[in-house]
Length: 562
Image (cartoon, rainbow, N blue to C red; front, side):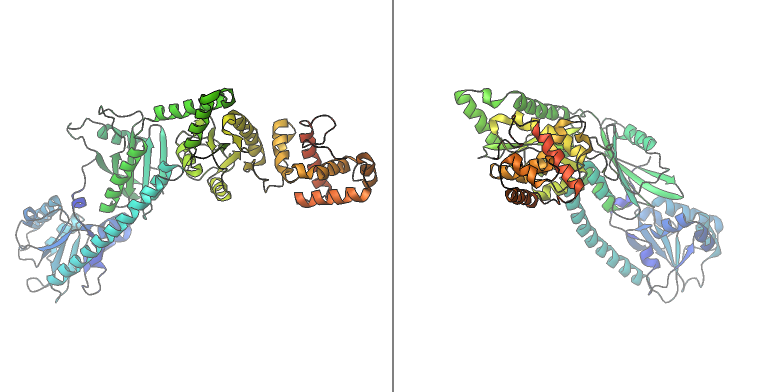
């Protein structure tokens, strides 16, 4: 672990800015070319060396007048071929944080003093040689222009990144989205630990010992403020798989009014090869503050209130209330759901076990308490709770097709009940529970207000009558209205009579052509090919599943046709 690099205090550009400038014809004389050719890590580190300013000082000890990140330019007045002097000179430059030494040939030296070149190569210190007649003013001008461009670019980039980080915390799985957004630059990665949960973004090296890294950061960051070495940000350098990463960590745990941390501390880290930038550090601090906001409310208390409220709504049936209390109950619910609502839908959201999100730390089919925030935003309702492997909610309006599609893209299955009076919310939730079981078997959303697009019959229907009835209601929705009672009765009879028009006509007491017309109309409404034996079998299964709920002598749906 080490303190914050000094170059973070100033705008910088990489040393490659000078090396790649054609007008300078700069030559990198140190480290030695053969060393750079065999050490890709060192070559990348040299090119990315941060430069904050270009300064000319022809003194024997210029380091005391320079700041970390400064580029020193000399013509060699202080060099006389003394090897020990040159080694000490380079050591002082390195200790002062000087980025590199730029040596201008002529008028003092026609070539680099061998002792200076040897000292630089011995320390792998960057030495750049400028041929005549390049003037130092040209170097200063190029550095200053690059720095101004970098300041403008950094400001624009930081504004965009700040917006993206803020948007990330408003999306589903905000912690995961945040680390993914934080690590979008090449060579960077991010990791967030909240209690026992770990979220990763970017390409994290497989060999990286994350547990040990977080243990070290935790020990340093969790020291009391004011203690020696205590800081809100810590830095280290990690080497793995032939690459070197500079890593910064920031504490993201909010503080309570009593200045004690909430349960489950949070640490956010960002790493980049070969080194971090000022933008990385600023983004890390902003992201850590956003994580702190996510954790600001006492999570255990907030979740307990959500569960208590939903428990009261589902266990205290509104129809049991009397008089003014009944009206007040309905009015409060309507206001909670957006005002003016007289009915509500129950919604159950479950993770699709076959559609786990890539990089998501939550196992397939599982949910976590923080998912309630996402569902609140999707459904625009405050009445959401997390229970076991489900999220449960009440909404004034059923989710739209776009909202259902968005949920599906994120790996969620939704079960939506039909609208129920506000005083019958327990009934709505019971219906949603049944539809949720069907949704898991079908593998798609089950919307009680509209027929689904799926054509497959759930395998769970044979073992679970509730699933069968729920799926059948979806399949047969177009012919389950009062106006389609005759079509439904004719279709039921015709299927039971194995497609015989005459036997169906006798059973119903109508002409065979009437049976043909009614069955044809039912087929058109259902949008299914009844010439297909398999399709006929599915429709018959659906009608049979609903028959158990019909009074004796009455076809499924509650009306008779004679």
